[in-house]
Image (cartoon, rainbow, N blue to C red; front, side):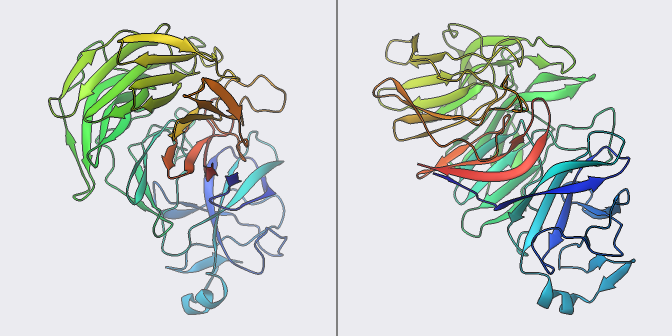
Length: 430
């Protein structure tokens, strides 16, 4: 069963002579849908992840809506008027909505947008649109680490910069908050949890117009909300977009990329397989995979000890594969098992009991797919068989998932091939 963590409503926004991606917060009002309202042409944007302030966008092509900020300050709308906070709290503050929209051309166009309900007033900083991030879980928080986000300056040279932003979602209060940012901006980062701490073993970072693998490693301590630098990754072993798994005090990185130049169709995929021990901070090279892979799904079976690398791609985002490789620690060898039914890369993956779920992904050639998959396929490690499950409600790629109980949480991701980050947040329940 697929459940919407943030209720979704579809509508259209009209935007005039501007190309940008932004967030708009709407609070209550006479309706939870956008209805034409006279007098209000101005569109006010709120950037909650970067500038933490309001700005005026291009005027709407038609009279449509009043845009309001959160009820901690004042509500804006109409002809430059403000509304008293106490009055607003009684009439406008029951629900908070966020709108994500992207106008593609320079003329007035009608484009689809998602109206996603986010946690109410206690959560002043809902999930920022992002993709190519990592997601980990330490009770009671789901942490969203790094990735690429919309430019806060509408930059044409770097419209989707790499971020150091870290946000966390509390399963107890159902609210978002900020955690200490990464020590440097990273996308496609390799993250895992060992003994209640988050470890980052490299990733991709901007350099001279491309993304290159970083040798930097860090550890995050939740009680103190601080990051500490660790020993660098040995030269030649640094990658981003690896398949990452944790076993005891050890993190495993399988495959990955050494760099990404989004202007090129080919990308340098590797077959490396390394282990890193958190206590000794030592990297160990293990037998390489049967073939290079990046952006693959991953699962780890503790007993008898096996690491699975599912799907992914090799040497370019269109070169998706359907292979399932498994490394057996007992024999120290790789072997190939039942193929992923739908070849795809940029997937989200998580494991519940003995099944590995591979969800979404990029490289869909089907018409009207935006190059993104909605497929949700589960691999039973006990029977070496695949089963189809409920598809994603909003197809995405370039995201990361965590399994908690019988739910798989999937925050953000890209809603179209390439870079198209969203703040949509949902979970799949087995």
